[in-house]
Image 1 (cartoon, rainbow, N blue to C red):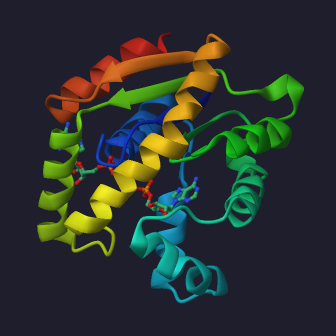
Image 2 (cartoon, rainbow, N blue to C red; image 1 turned 45 degrees about the horizontal axis):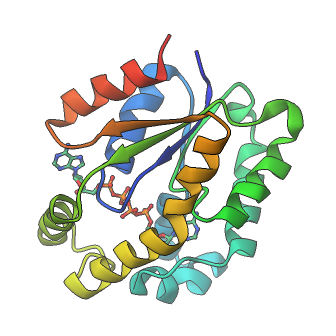
Length: 188
Ligand code: B4P
């Protein structure tokens, strides 16, 4: 079983949805940088105050803050045997930081990219906006997040592909179907 996993894909591909399901099946913690930022904003922490504006606008939080947060989270006991990172690394500098955090002997086992086209993800995020009212799910901000993804995050997949560690999974279909495809891709 590959236990040190990163989950990649554009906003709305289903990373958050699938990370929770996979973590349960695989017995590792799902660590979502986006969720950690949102809970800090909700609780009014110092970190929350620092990242509120930047997340609401769809830009990326600084690498410095994000890498430190991931370093602290991965140092916790429950991540010692494996983890599923959702939404991190999000640019090539974060890939380098994660390599350094994990050290040469504990690198990522597999990077799983959930693929979905722009129309499908936009529709999903607009639907979520009606239900959850997330600050970054407005039409303008969604467009900006997709641009940020294309410019800064898509190269992350290429870096893992160069290492022979990337698998791509079609994220279109029922949630259960996508979960099964992901489990098949991750393998025994
Ligand atoms: P994230 O929380 O990572 O937001 P996201 O990319 O939009 O993904 P999310 O997990 O929410 O959506 P999902 O695809 O699961 O980041 C938010 C912000 O935090 C960023 O913009 C940035 O500012 C900051 N941030 C986070 N990580 C960072 C980092 N590493 N560096 C710097 N900044 C960082 O799901 C979307 C919707 O699709 C849901 O409503 C879901 O119900 C639906 N859905 C899922 N699967 C479906 C299916 N199969 N069919 C239909 N709908 C489906």
